[in-house]
Image (cartoon, rainbow, N blue to C red; front, side):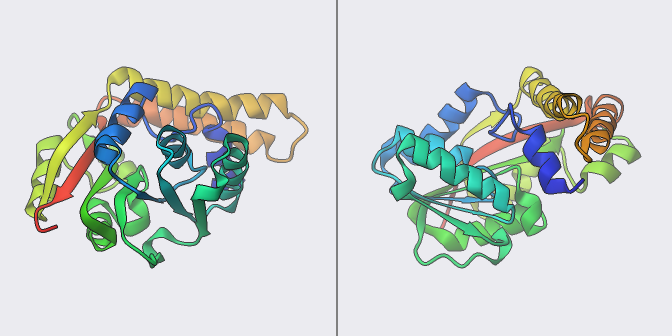
Length: 246
């Protein structure tokens, strides 16, 4: 069962695809769009386009672009945009986000939960800086170590740091945090329950599908990793950033 299908099924009931509740998403978009002054928004690793769709419906003056390698996610975004009547303000690019070359600058660049597409948080911010219009902002979401990780957790989730070190690294690159959100335990657990539960439910509802058994296995493996390996150590922070020199 390919990773794209697993992700699509696992996020069926949590389309924001990050450990954030609706209030946090709304708050972060407001901070990123800074009072509705932004006109162009870009989402790098947009998946099904949920961030962009919410922004477009809340701010009728916006134009948005999304980039993702998952064609099925982009197709869902197009269908949803048509249902919402915002398809004329949305452009989607089926390509690697790290290779994207925009035709114009953006007032807000989003990358929540997709910094791995660039090789990590700092390389993603370096790319985003080149896309920003004067006065533009970046809204980025990434993991950090909230507790001491085991060797297994570090091997599973990669090169993360604690929250103060993460912010130190960001500010050392010339970024100034102007707003942020640290996901609560409730948000983190709700995301993981939705991920594993949606995938497992699909498997049980489709017992004759060739991917049913592997989907159920994937849900169980992920649930075990979450509960046994990283739940007590992993955190997630979303930052609204402005560059000092912009």
